[in-house]
Amino acid sequence: MSTGHDDQAGSGTVLIAAVLLIGCLLAGLAVSAAAYLVKMEQVSQASDLTVLAAAGFGCDAAENVAATHHVEILSCEFAGDAFDHVAIVTVAGEFNLFGFKSQITQTAYGGKLAN
Image 1 (tube, one colour):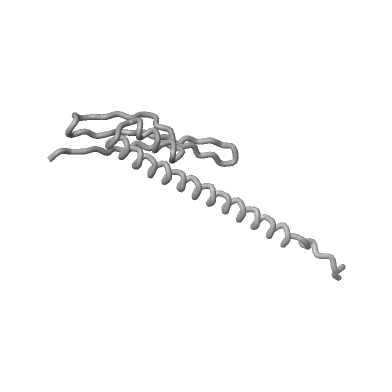
Image 2 (cartoon, helix red, strand yellow):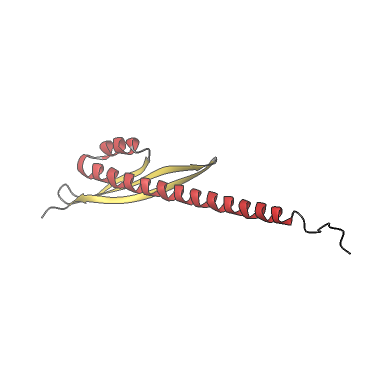
């Protein structure tokens, strides 16, 4: 004879809560990964623009471009001579997610070759 009391009453609620929690965690992880990839792309683009400024106008101009794009120049070097030279610039950008900070670095090469 059944008493009408089900031993598994409410287990569906717990299961749905667990699924929703896992879904929220996965969504948060996806958003965090996307934000990191966006910041990597921004630092990469900033390094390209900075090396172009350095190759054309010197490291002082590169500092201005880096500041505009919120990155820091770690190194700015030249190889070659006045006619055939390559600028080598390494920049760093800060990635901050929920108080956890990470530095993203990128090196770019650019220059002028005489024919």
